[in-house]
Structure formats: structure tokens, C-alpha cells
Image 1: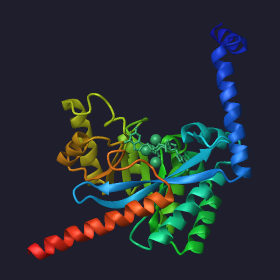
Image 2 (image 1 turned 90 degrees about the vertical axis):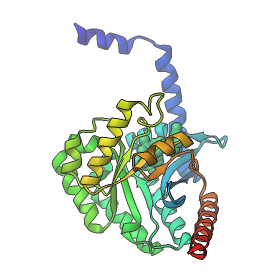
Image 3 (image 1 turned 180 degrees about the vertical axis):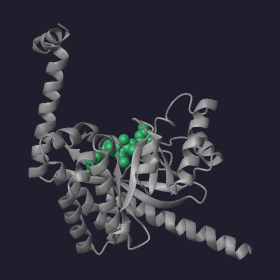
Image 4 (image 1 turned 45 degrees about the vertical axis):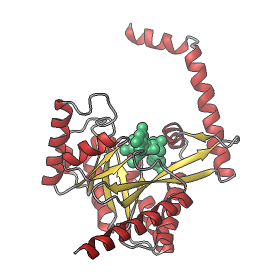
Length: 290
Ligand code: C2E
Ligand code: MG
Ligand code: MG
Ligand code: MG
């Protein structure tokens, strides 16, 4: 009977559903036109070491403009692109633009993170094709880190483990994204080896982020990351207070609006160069003082 009710609900006209259908249709159009007229772009958000102020890495984030030049959120277009089988196209663009950026920055010690969908983890041809893109730009595999969320790890543990190992054997770095937002089984941290654990912004962007309970949770995740040899990056850091809290917990690496929103490649290059010369002058001053 419950099943019947469920079906009934689906066939009943709902203004909300109609609205979503309309939105979905406009996103589909934006994706199709985006592919036709090259309206996909990549924005870049720095990760910084909040102790030194140094930009230590960058996350590449897909962007799509509709025909009015308005940005469509990746949270909206990524799932639809996946449904239509064109997510690969977006991943190539993001990877290629990341390689272009890294080539311009010219520091083989500096890397970029690219998000891949859980299902792409098992597309080993994609990984090999990405390897070829890196070759074209003279970028080392260790300069690219794949960020994955935990869904796929749960759906097919065995395959995910093998595929992650395959990716790591190439020399790519791996990060577990949005840790704390989903299932966050601590067991997975032991089973799968990741270079980086990204602490989801859900910990930081809440009213009670500084409560004793929140701090205890972050502290234990941090301890676990250390024990398992993972770097930890706090996402969604927006305020000085949040920076201070992270620092007091020994979490140095942060990403968030506090330092910068995701910006265009051009803007990122400027940000990076200014940051580098800033850091250098700080070192010079320190050395003079010695
Ligand atoms: P994510 O990988 O967890 O990326 C971080 C998201 O948090 C980004 O949203 C970023 O703009 C946002 N963010 C960064 N700092 C702050 C902050 O201080 N405060 C707040 N409120 N937000 C902050 P964005 O760019 O809208 O991307 C959303 C999600 O879409 C990403 O989450 C990622 O899961 C997905 N995505 C983006 N680009 C790609 C892509 O190329 N491929 C795949 N598969 N997914 C992508
Ligand atoms: Mg990410
Ligand atoms: Mg994230
Ligand atoms: Mg996310």
C-alpha cells in the first residue's frame, strides 16, 4: 500500500516538481551549449598554510556559464552532466586548464587538485587519458591530486581500493574530500590510503563550530590523520576566528573565503605571484634579522 501511495505521489501534479523539471531543462541546455560554445571554464581556489601565509596548493573547480553569462553552480550541473554521460568532457577541461596553470607557474613542487566523481574512479581509461594531458604540458603526476568523496568507496570497496592503488601507482596524489559530510566511517581511512584528508566545511561553517563537542571531533580526526600519515586541510574557513581555532588544533592548511574565493586562472596567477614575493620578502627580513 505504501508503494502505491509512492506511485500516486509521483503521478500527482506538483508545482515543485514542475519547477525542478524546468530548472533541469535549463541546466541541460546550458551544458549542451556550454560544450558547443566553450562556456566551461575552471576557477582556482588557493590552499594556504595559515602559519606562513604561503599558498601551498590550489583546487580546480568547474564553472559553466549560461547564454546570459550567468554562472551555473557545479552542484547543479555536475550531477546532470554525469547523468547524460558528459562528465568526462568537463574533467578533461578542468585537468587541461589546471595543467596550463601549473605550466605557467613553473614550479614542479606546486600542485593542483581536481575533483573526480566517485564513478570516475573506476574509469581507468580516463586516468590514462589524463596522464597523456599531463605529458603534453610537462606536468608530473605528483602535481595532480584527485579529490574523491566517499560514496564509491562504500558502494564497491574492492574495486575502489584497486582503482585508488592504480591511480597512486601512476604517482597521482589522492584526497578524501568532504570528510565528515557523509558516512565518514573511520574504518575507510585505514582501508584506503589517501595523501590528504579534507575536513568538510560542515565542521567549520556552523554556529557551534567552537563548541567543546565540535572541537573534540575535529581534534580526533586530526589525530587520526596524523597517525595514518595524511595531510589534513580544513575547508570552508571564512573568518579569522576559524583560522585561529584551526591553528590552535594544529591544522595549518586551510582553504576558504577567508583567504580567497575560487578565482579565474589569470587572477590566481596574480595572487600566487604576489604571495610568493611576499613570502620571499618575509624570509629575507627574517634572514637579515639573524
Ligand atoms: P568541493 O570539491 O568540496 O569544493 C569546495 C566547494 O566549497 C566549492 O564550491 C567552493 O567554492 C566552496 N567553498 C570554498 N571555500 C568556501 C568558504 O569559505 N565558504 C563556503 N561557503 N564555501 C566555500 P563549488 O565550486 O560551488 O563546487 C561545489 C562542488 O561541486 C565541489 O565541492 C565538488 O564536489 C563539485 N565540483 C566542482 N568542480 C567539479 C569537477 O570538475 N568535477 C566534479 N566531479 N565535481 C566538481
Ligand atoms: Mg573538492
Ligand atoms: Mg570539499
Ligand atoms: Mg563538496
